[in-house]
Image (cartoon, rainbow, N blue to C red):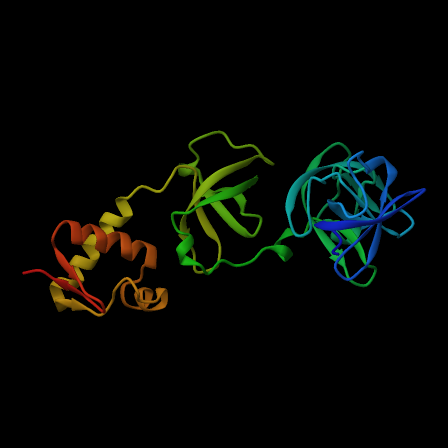
Length: 275
């Protein structure tokens, strides 16, 4: 079982404090009585969130917190004391954000962007404002045009910062903000560019097929020069990007258009210009 995540565990036995659940390795964890339902019995499989209680014991709950391990969310600060800040993450026991994980002074009743992390040394969960540590750089050009989940963050000089699919950094340029965006809001968007630095440019509206028309014209121009391109549907994304500088998805959409316009012949290992 893993702290900070939803685990599917099996009820092994009942005891006065509650039910003891086990994972596939027979590790046990207590599900307190207040979370036990009438239909629960030995052998029942239960989805639970696993964490540590105030006495550093592993326990679980059927309640789902606002944030899971590695995710990013805006959470409200409930209390600040000499040890750090405590934030409301939807469970009875508030989440500690140590001073070392804060980027600036936190105020009670204010919401800030946090991520949920795990400390291997203490075997405990903690909150952190250092969200970039859990975000990846995107290298997948196939994401261009895809619908994605957005967490709306702060407004910057160029536009609105966003977290994409709880995994990547993104930006909605000011001229692409077609609706009012609020910090902490969750909404849908579309990837328009995967940048060399691994960040994403995002639009709020679906990407139109205009880019495929541009790609079709580019391929047509290339074929006018060389007549044959050694690329086809089965070509790897790396081959396509190396020769044409576009994603495989864009390439396939573009040659599909050229084929329907009777401009090219698509062969098993190449495309050829007609005429």
